[in-house]
Length: 375
Ligand code: COD
Ligand code: ZN
Image (tube, rainbow, N blue to C red; front, side, top):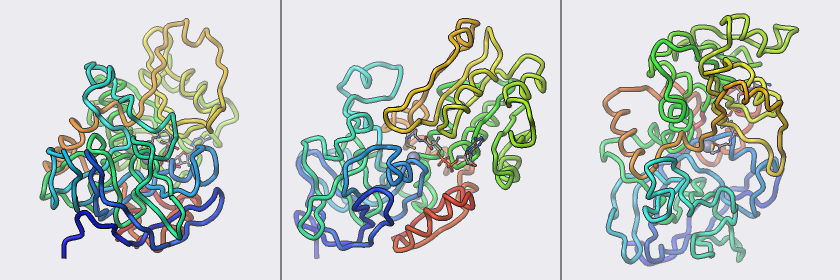
């Protein structure tokens, strides 16, 4: 029996308040309105940014359904949706591509003005929610909300992908892989033969390592305080792995000594003030490029010595690897299908959605790279 046009009751992991575990609840998911799409989520990865909402570092309204790195199948579409139909395989996009705002019309950048990252309203673009649970409205998360069997997203925030793509693998292309890989190949545009330093070897940092390798970097220095991350970093292309705890001097001095004059490209993929400054100081003056991928807790700031930039370094930032998502995500999935990269190596654990809290414990304990939750 078709569910189109009807409210769907399904399982979801609801976060009622900060610093509490998820509750597996039955939620009601309203049908998609005009220009919206309701998706049956098949697989969703756990990303550190979801954890930042739990801890309060990333301020979002509660109660909320988190999750933003997923793949699924279109269940039904609202009026006016022409770019996809029920049965299509899709990836929800936390940076939409409306095609009309100045960012979308420009060839540069990818931060569509319709995104809900900065505004953090936790609502659909029309200012309402499609989720209820126990009579209460539940917020959306950055236009995606994927820790639920069904979600509703705006058409501008969905990419249709290859019908042969394995959803339990390509879900990582919705965030972690694309963010890191794009930071290297798209935002930094790493040149062949260059030297790169990657601070932080989570799922996103390891994807930066993959991007640096694909771009032809000859030296990739991987930095983490958890040495258990080094084996995978080496497997993916790191030529050196260093732990700042093994040195008494600041890590930027260690890197400058290792390279003679600092690295060509540095990437901060942790989200800490001290490592952001260290990454900037690690790249060489005159030509070095530092790309910030991590973010600090909402409302906090860092201070730097302006001389670090006056001396010629370039300091850049990237959200989702700079990809214009509706255009790029289907192409990245095609590249995955053509085996141009292997993001599967990032998946260390697979769990049912009912074990979502266990998945977050693995991340906090530094034991997982990516856990994929299945429905
Ligand atoms: N020095 C070196 N390494 C460190 C340090 C330190 N002081 N502290 C922690 N680390 C290591 C950890 O051991 C870990 O291996 C790694 O840093 C961080 O990895 P994860 O698995 O916690 O995180 P990821 O890879 O899932 O995500 C990292 C981000 C930086 C992307 C994330 O935390 C973030 O800041 N997101 C906000 C920015 C963003 O792009 N958001 C969009 C959606 S993701
Ligand atoms: Zn993420």
